[in-house]
Length: 168
Image (cartoon, rainbow, N blue to C red; front, side, top):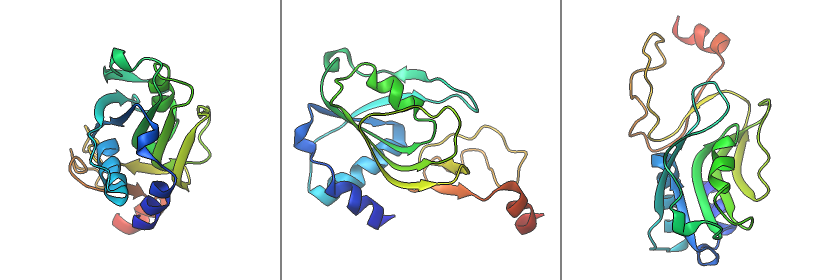
């Protein structure tokens, strides 16, 4: 992961943006890693956009501040699966804004197109958890309520058929 973060940091110049937006804990965690590689000490603006479970769309809890409307911003999040979260955030920003994510998934139907995006790694369409993810169900041995709330990285769950051979 450190090698991926180094490559991402090489592609970003924080001073080119009016503001840096971090989406929840996952975005903030990635921002801190990127900022440390660049010796950047500026403060990001925290926003909170969620993708509803197994659906398309976005729940907006803490929106992009109005004073940033049409500004060139750097938007940081840990996981870009359907990319609809980035798409919703970008509606308020300049077309020159840039999205950065540690990982995305390939093979997802109806994945949104994002014009300016930098991705660290691409994975198959498997279940991923990022820092701050809130898990509300506990009927599966892999999941424990809030297990990844404070975990600093990305967790990938093997496909169910592989997992069943490991734990059942």
